[in-house]
Length: 560
Image (cartoon, rainbow, N blue to C red; front, side, top):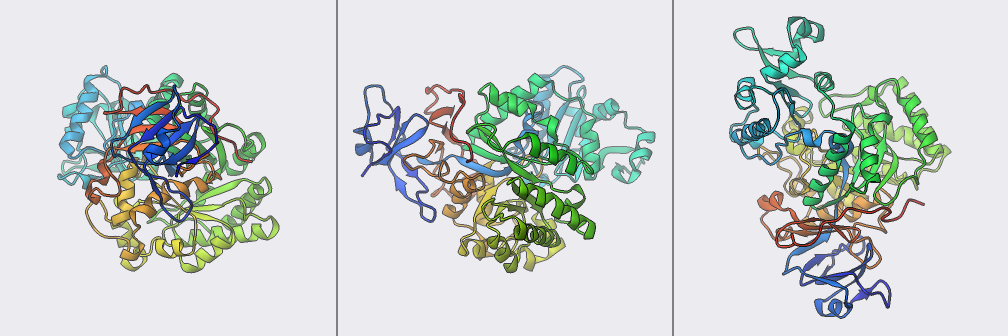
């Protein structure tokens, strides 16, 4: 029986003859055939016959022809603010099947640009996705773009510059000596190969490239949000990113003001550099009220970097000594006092323990159980950590990082630790909130279906197994982590993430059936029709005749 939102509401649009996964409730997945949209909300769900009877003279009817429909996907940890500023300047390699095709993409971009214009590929790909099993050489980049500086970065491990890029930045013997010869690869002839390594070097080189103009950053942010819509993403929690400070958010806000931001974005804020954490976070808390914004853009809280000195990696422990723990406590205490939520980065167990210890001390003074403080990454969680986190009312934001970095984790942590990193089955059995995401754009693909497939298989890009079988998620569990559970982390579980009467009409109509297609083909799924608040923000065949609109503010509600 159709479930109406309002007894006498007349839908603006109805979708019929579909296979609609509603994610109704919190622990079950219900399927329906049709739904009605009134304004920005789902008005009713039911059979095609029932929903069809609700149509009025002006109601638009869309026949889904049996296609799978899901709630709009929410990437609960991604770096779209930073990536959006340069999106149109980058050549993305996530979907390139071979190194040859990736190089050809660089060549096509060079043909469209004047000599001297920079071309960048900054993360999101892995040599293991290519049959060649490697990244590009300087000579190969020279061959496809001889007149344009080219910079290709792999994770935060290494980058390759072509000759034009080395000349533009003036990479010479003096610069090598200044920055450290250990970061620069040389060939058998003693000459620089164009390859540089190390996170600090990535940051240094990137800071020397010309920045897009403000208007270019706005256009890039708008283009990126539409690309995410193409993949069914309607919401994102942004994790900031290194060098992201108070002055880096202007393009995101301007895109929103113009109605061109088509992904509901929740921002977590942190300082722009080491040594500025307390000054800048105090400024954020003083001048950035958490109810500022609307249903499309709003500041959620603090994260993911709390202290730069305590930024760890899978293979790099952080400083969590006595002084760092004291600073953790001071920072978390201020945030609790101002009732800010926190999403805190932690890869190493020592970091997890230090953060939880500080949270427990803060909780003894300020009740944080309603603030939903959560750990980001947190792969080596132990059962005792889960109990501690649950007692604090927190959750875990997990990503498929082992798709690219699984071999590193196996080498560093060993198979026994990696098999339970994280212990998804224990977490779900305990009823913990687990939000899933990508951690794109540098260290992972932004394609949510690539990430969803990883949670089902646990296999690296080379095909090696990481998670134990009992920690692999079902298709339903993984989708819930990208929809209903993801909404919890921004206090919106009663607003979005499920397709029920009264919920926001954030919807993705898929090109293939996520629940039935072979797991190897899940990464090929796209959205052929995406709605944000009942408005079409992306349409492809056979729905490309539907007009795509901007998202007029306001949509949705603000946090109480």
